[in-house]
Image (tube, rainbow, N blue to C red; front, side, top):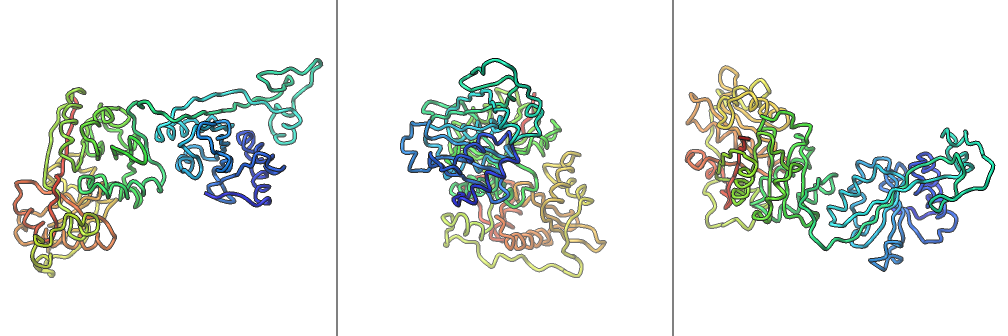
Length: 486
């Protein structure tokens, strides 16, 4: 965000805004008068310069001393890209959302973003939409391309006033939107809002670190959203920045198959699990008409999810497993969990393998059927499609046997978790999977990724392997709820 202070820059802004008339008219008129002496001591902010997307004209902070004076606390906004200006307008340096205020614009397309921001900031909105007029001479000078400007034929008779604005017959019309916002003290209906823009998602990632390990599944997902978001996920919060509940889910356009619960998967973290049922029951948050999965590092969400499933007429299968995080990940993210007296012995390296017989490699999509065959949660067409996507989007590791085909492998899912490890039966008990996971762990550490995984509570072999590789068992568990409509 930049303030344009120099007179030359303000004149450049005025000239530039003319190109976007009539949608920029309210801001253009304000900047015009700023260049004529700036009687109201306003300032102009842009998101970037000179190729700005959004302009906000507002009073100086020293003029806005009365939090309840929305007449003074008025903002004029123009955006070339109304759908993507929410992050800029949500910044406290741009708009003081703690005050009663007004936003004015000649763009009705800003309405959705202003209402979304108002909901996030917990303010009540009253929108007014009025007719906007321009005198014919002004229109001819500024907007000669408009038919109404050149085809105006004056008529005899006196000018008349409509809604307090001098109007002559034939003057062209645009809509003016005035939005008045006031701080809300009463309860806001349960709703969640999408965090858009890299800055907000980075803030969410940083905030989730404070609630590890219970937030680990959501934290890992948001981390990878900030690394390019390969699965095109979106993050919803109940409020911002002091959220209680976060839901990460696919975009609606990705969830086209009502029976594909591998795609229709939701990651949830809540600071207040007992009171998030209303939020999770909203169809805008979870599509309860589909087969779906909910995943979380919080087993105490079980009661809420079971209640919701009962009210929505769903059958639920709850799977709970041990959750592990790699030692260096714990040191970096959750050092309070380290007990130096109970650290695993040794150096965390696996035993050597026959590197002449087994060659380290990576998987390609043609190997998805093999992974699918041995994956506990897979074995069907939809799971194979999900595995193919994981192979395409994230690093994979495998060992090729003497015939050049994978005999042992490991992948990552859309949350960045190490998953779907497997070894062909005839190659088991040779330490191959330990070797692959160790190599994968070293590679992911070099990329700065958080490293975590889960293990079945009855799988003693994998639990021992995790211990030997210095993967630390978390005090919370890995949870998945497979939900099917009855």
